[in-house]
Image (cartoon, rainbow, N blue to C red; front, side):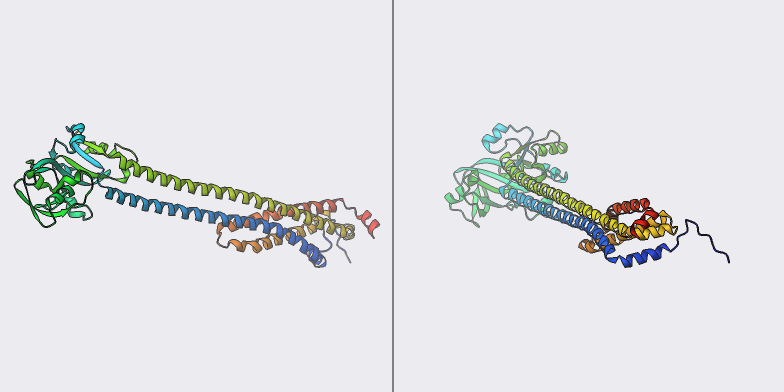
Length: 426
């Protein structure tokens, strides 16, 4: 009968069986190690989940506030444009040869230009001005009324007249609108007829008192004013409203008109109205943007504080768990000194005995990482790819927590002497 010679490298008993029996015999100690690792991993994953959710909530809040600001600015711009329209025209286009001193003194231009210019400007697709109205203004001696009056003839371009009902429409040919200072003295009313230097007109509307030159103004169709002032086919100014895109800087209207009709026009902008509206808009936008930026900075600062606190808490939990696992493993190794001595005496190599202890440590790390991850990952179920990163982080923490335990086991096993152990403990 032959017996197989046992080599030092051949384990006497299977490592799996020994590991299973060891776990069953010392299950409470194993459970403590898994719990410590789970707490460390769960603290980290929970911290990452809460920080991620808070960051997403911060982004949503800031995006919502920014959308609200854009909507508020858009509404405010629309209201400003409507206010500009109610304030009336703020841009006057004059012939190139008009002396501005005379224009300011007389309230109307003495030089004229062809009325077809308004059609040219409208077809050019101007972006800095809108609502163009051609005007011919002049002062007359009203023979029938025995007084001086301002005659203003107005007309829209042919495309504007057919496309925009929102624009103030000039009086129809043969009708007039009479200022307060004239109709109140002459007892005129809507529907009556009046003679104006040999021409008969129907009063379409009596204008309310305004306290300006409009009170002695008679508005009529451009063709009627041209006939009355004996300037057929001519106008002496074009009134317009400046668009919002030109509010930021003066001179944009003149620059655009120079490209359409080089050297043919002068532009006078009523900067008082434009500047006031522009300053109000800019101040409102600046303050709103500043408040949004302060909110963003405040939330970023709070996020940094929470991140530092969360990471500090996770590090502390990992440190406590590492010490906990190291102590339980050390006590486990010390309690198994006799078992280690017997195994060494039976010829089991140190590497196999060390493998037995390391299997327990690895199993504690894996189970603790999975348990800690599953216990806290439900907080952010919709995190997507971040969950995978969090699980990798949990495994990393589990390895860090278990490393001291593995080192302690390796030192105790490698230094154990079978003879001395059995002599002292048996």
